Image (cartoon, rainbow, N blue to C red):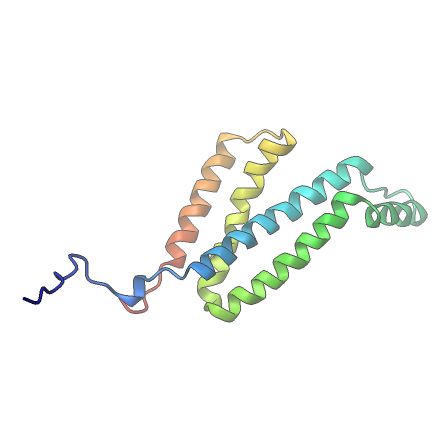
Length: 145
């Protein structure tokens, strides 16, 4: 006697299929984009304020930035984020992909608080929540559904 498989209780719709390669790329982009900002901040914290007293002092500062390890690592992360972004927009409509990049506006303050001991105000936390919700709503696609 031949048995048949029962029908799935949830209809499978290709519009709701998760593309894990794109999800992983977005997570990597968020990590590298956040790392860029934190590393740049760590780098400039070691050098102090940008001098505006003379062109010579400003050029020396820039020279020190270019040999500063956190800044150099931040530049590497920036390049990696660039190539990841190229991979993302080769797979996803720009109108859907770009809103997700605003999640970095949430990840940077959170990492700044955790790693740099910066203080997050209630207003900033509420703003981050709005950004995350806005990215989600903007990213909802009307295609196929």
